[in-house]
Image (cartoon, rainbow, N blue to C red; front, side):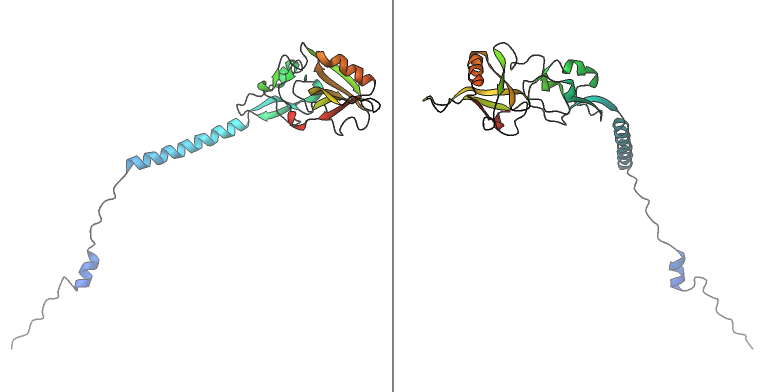
Length: 217
């Protein structure tokens, strides 16, 4: 009697088992050294910029700040200045150590309170107070000057004749600088010496009035 032989087991197993054991090859990643180097440079550049900003923000300088209005052509006073600590931004601010020179100079433009002073805002000589100019004091009554007149304003100086005469009003100084304003209508203006005597004469008789020129500061 012949004994039947069992078929040999398939060593390969099912086709699914074969595909699970064998994986497809994965192609190697392509390296981009140029992009990697650029990323490193950007990171380093940002870190350096941040460091410089932090270091620069800690640099403080002592500058001059104006705390009282200074009109164009007027001389700076010690009372109009104060010391302030600011960040060093590279702007040409006048250092506080030069305040002695500042009070010897004159404003080139009208400077408002709170302004940090720069070198181009002052000059060593003033055409307003130079040769050919004179300071004239006026004692004005209500109605002869506008309210709120302050040092540094520009005004017209007008001769206002008395009502008994036939003479008409006329402008003696078209744009006079107000050098100072005191109490009870006392105003000092700077006019040309050519008309200063006439202004003084009319002022003594109360025939002077001033009109403000807001746009001429």
